[in-house]
Amino acid sequence: MSEHKSLLRSAGAISLATLVSRVLGLLRDQVQAYFFGAGLVADAFLAAFRIPNLLRDLFAEGALSSAFVPTFTAERERGGDEAACRLANRVMTALALVLGIVAILIAVFAPSILRVYVPGFEPAKMALAVTMTRILAPFLLFVALAAVAMGVLNTHGRFFLPALAPAWFNLAAILGVLCLVPVFKRLGVHPGMALAVGAMAGGVLQFLVQVPAMRREGFRFRPELKPRDPALRRVVRLMAPATFGLAATQINILVDTILASLYGNGPIAWLSYAFRLMQLPLGLFGVALGTANLARVSKDAARGDAASLRANLAGALRAAALLTLPATAGLVALREPIVRILFEHGRFGPHDTLKTAAAVLCYALGLYAYSVTKIQVPTFYAMGDTRLPVIASASAVGLKISTNLILMALLPRVGMDPFLGLALSTSIAAWTNMAILERGLTRRAGSLREHAVVPVTLKLALLSAAMGAACAACQAALERFAGGGGFAGEAGRLGISVALGIGITALGVHALRLREVEAIRARIRGRVAGGGGRP
Image (cartoon, rainbow, N blue to C red; front, side, top):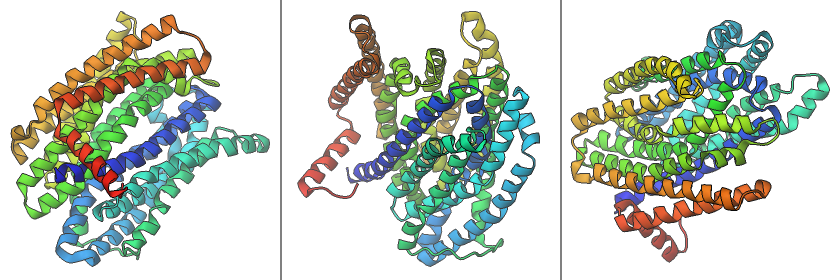
């Protein structure tokens, strides 16, 4: 029980911080949709932002975190805090040098990159995207440094502040639009530039807000370049296959953007807004559990405790099912009213709502697989196994690219937009990736049968399906018999349907008597008895 409480406490702190960040992220998208809709400016910004964002996943938050945290943990176990801090300094110095050069190259070659990346853009949209790309080029460096800071703090048991850091990015992006759009209009600068300036400022803040906490943990940054450091070389050695594996995922995004750009204004923005909605439960549950579990399984691997590693992994997978499957069912059942309430304002109209909601359905079908993968992949890296995640990712991307072409040809024949094939194929690829990793983990770490992961997941899937059907029926009945009322009426109806879903889920998990639920109750009882406590 104490192990479950510890994992859920860490994941809970991350989820709370991530909730703040994701809510601000939704607000950022609402502000963007209100001012710029889903047309030329939104497409140009999203195309420009995806270039440093793509490289961020490759070289920063994805591969770097998976490689840095286990190595930093091992250094701290063997050599203490001083050795671990030396490693962090050397990693940050190397990142500043390499990614500084990359940022310059992005700025210089932005026109050529975008001609390949979004060939369907007409000249005005292309020119705007090029300027935005140059403004955003240094973003990669600062989020990479933020990823190292997060790894240092997570290893010291500090999860809340690092998970909250992205909230500063979203806040800066919101304020950038609200404050700079009128200023830029008066100065004769394209108002869309406020999106790029705000995002760049947010990237800087995402790193700077973590610096004071690092200093309190005893870390002091001292530039030190030592390429032959064995620990630094291990980080690079782990990053190389991780980067290759993630590159397969980024090829998917590249292909999706190229294909979506061929369908005029809208598809890039519709897919982006839909993916943002899927990222809310993914960030709250999948990423939070994966981050908390990485710190735990890294210690297990460093100590050679295979039994504890399996127990921690199984607990994270059961918790992912408990949290992600009901969220998936609710998102699928209530996708249209959710999109309507969040985005249908200003320049974002009913047509945009229908297209975005359709994309939400296609993406949500892969939400559980995405969440589980966020737990599986870091576990492989904690064990020093980088080969299978690369194979799984490469297999998934090959399947996705071929499925893209098939679905985009078939969907119009059944009355669906071809761009939806890009979202649906993403979900198919996510399930493929998860299945390959699951088989590999069974061989590498041992069977989890004794931890009842599969039976619990199946029970929760059935419960979630029933809950989703009830929510959809409730929403349809409310719209039929109590429609109208404008925004307040829409929000009220959605609130009733969501409350019904929460109630059904709560009763169902109570009947199932899951260990994770008991751990949550024990923690709540402990907080009440103790008069509070740390989050």
